[in-house]
Image (cartoon, rainbow, N blue to C red; front, side, top):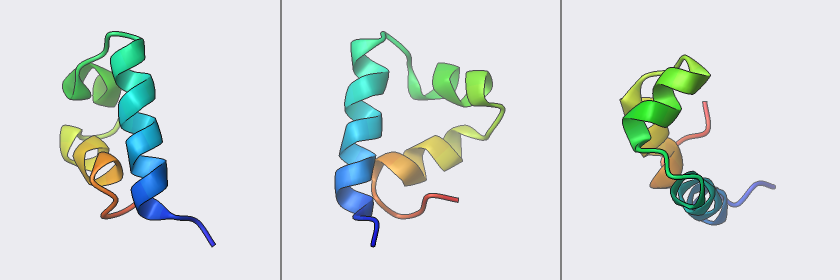
Length: 46
């Protein structure tokens, strides 16, 4: 089973390492900034 909290922390860490804001990552992935926030906070992966 996927650990949402651990996955979210990893997404956040990688985003920061690459110098992206949440909004920039969302635009690059063609999702909403709210989706990125939910991922990073371990609330959802969809």
